[in-house]
Image (cartoon, rainbow, N blue to C red; front, side, top):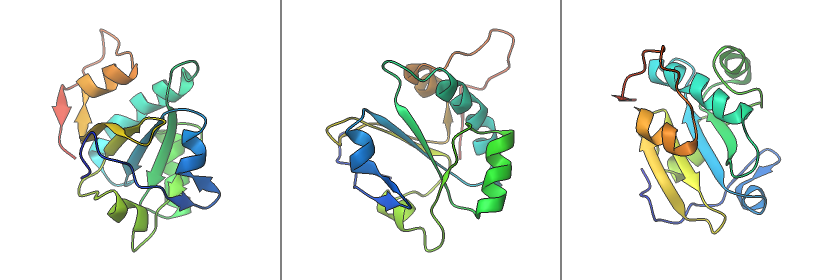
Length: 145
């Protein structure tokens, strides 16, 4: 996967352009597959992040490696309200970002620099993004993707 501190490659999926999104503020890219149990754990917390989006919160952009129908069902159950971008085979954007496991999250600053890169579930990284965990929810510190 791309390392923190490296430059995020620009890409376009449908009408979405990373460079255009970065002109409006930082972007959190979240790559996933609908069959991935760790994605199913992670995405409800990303939904919380999306719900509190506002001043200082990064724009959450989810990128699915699955078809539109399955992705829409996944998003309805686990993910944020915004539709996911589709990176279908041969996974051009996933390969550009050297995705080997999902979920993979990249926080990209407005200058195009990757300030956070994490594969799998990491409670500490999600807390840094502003996700709030309730005391009564059993949340693992980490889970590989």
